[in-house]
Image (cartoon, rainbow, N blue to C red; front, side):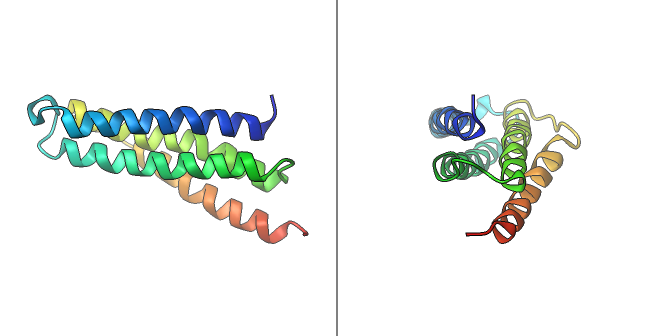
Length: 125
């Protein structure tokens, strides 16, 4: 399976999960969250997940043959989403922080955007 196809497929599932988690955040009684601010944490995770799902979709649709840097950026974005948003979901529902998981995922997301930008600068045409 090609990278663009993997990105498109992952984006679709990530977006579906983001919508479902948004519904959970909107309708779950506050007592079911692990923290008083759990609902807000889930909403932040949903927002980050959806924006990055759309970015992966754009990469999958727009880059039929990504450069090495563009491929690296997309491949960094996927685990970044899962680590960052996953850690936020766990924290929101359990009340327990997973140490450096969210910052690692967030760092991957930031780096993926930087690498993507450099990849676009370096690519001819």
